[in-house]
Length: 54
Image 1 (cartoon, rainbow, N blue to C red):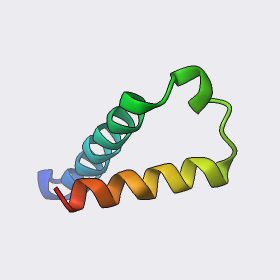
Image 2 (cartoon, helix red, strand yellow):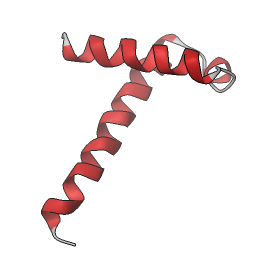
Image 3 (cartoon, rainbow, N blue to C red):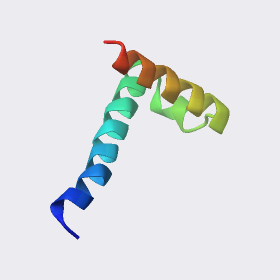
């Protein structure tokens, strides 16, 4: 595998980490692990939109 092929995976990891950090800034981890998939998806989408619009 070349370096160029590995980059998208790394970028996805970094973006995911940034999103989770943002979500965790305003939500308790104990609450987050209990969320249903629909709640989690809403929070992730909201946070992604906030990051894009900064």
